[in-house]
Length: 476
Ligand code: ADP
Ligand code: F6P
Image (tube, rainbow, N blue to C red; front, side, top):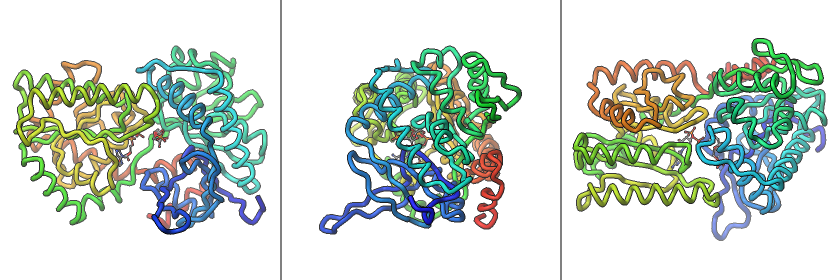
């Protein structure tokens, strides 16, 4: 990499923030910026600093050459078919993902998965070392890349390195089960700042550095084995509140919402769920609660209908396949028992949607159900709240989502307790308008002050890069 392309700000994440667009008949693909919150947050800094984002572009085999999009340099990293199986589907999503989510499904482990994880992490670290200018700031994202901070520091000790974990970090008893646990801890300790979604997660990490490495954490700082101070703290991520509000306020979305409500038979109450089809999201528990409420008559069709969007995800992994079978069986059972001709009790949609279509769904949802068994944050909960421009609607929110610490006025519930889930769902359906407004107003106010740029600014300031954080001053 020549110095002319070296960047003073580099983001390293498993995925690039772009979607590939293939037009039949035209030679070569084009790229479109994907609508994710992370890229929205980092875009101002990437633009101001002529920054680079390193990540996988999707697909297997050779990666495209680096290219520029919307003022960001994008540097694609290749993954071959074996690496997809072993690094991505294996160690990242069948070992770490379940283990870090309270082992709600049994984590699997194979030694060749670990080898692949190491190999791919080394590739990302080497690419970051090549792309970063002297003394640059490199921000590594998420559980797929936990070895990158230490690998990169060995290659480039001049860099300032941050790491942010988007998912939960487990308590000692669970982390201790992880094969190669010391390598993971040492990998993270290569960063100057390790960020988590919650104070509890940061505490779990600091405690483990004492228990497994004999380090002496004090408050938020621990001195790593090479004598460097490492800060471990919580920086809860959020959404681009203004842009979610703007989309929800558009005529296109308002018209689509009217259309959708009519298509659903104009019921009194629409209950909505929007989740990746993932076993951490508590979709089965939610459906079971709905079925029992229909069965005992506390709710009834066609007054009340449920819409469940289950976004396709990680479809080759067995736990995900099994979940799909279970969820689809349960939807079929509910519709068989309680649906009417032309009026299913549950509208089940296994599809991806545009931001506008999702916003229209948020607008028609009288009750939004976000009931994960464990979730690092859950942005859907925040998007729903920000979309409720009239301050009505009720959010049923799991205590086990990181978002519960921010959205305190939600109808909070323990989703493992089916009776509690049922009674909170009924309370939300029957909640008076003035109570809904009181709760929603407070949550919307919170999200205006705590958006995704607030998150990025907080992390970058902790990383000792206030000059980078000023990119937001002109942006806002
Ligand atoms: P996770 O990161 O585990 O998938 P989050 O709730 O934090 O869960 O984030 C999910 C993101 O994906 C949200 O921004 C949401 O709007 C988006 N999303 C969820 N389902 C769909 C879908 N069917 N189509 C398009 N975007 C979706
Ligand atoms: O929030 C965790 C996360 O793995 C993100 O890193 C990712 O964008 C999202 O879930 C979807 O997962 P995947 O990249 O495996 O499709």
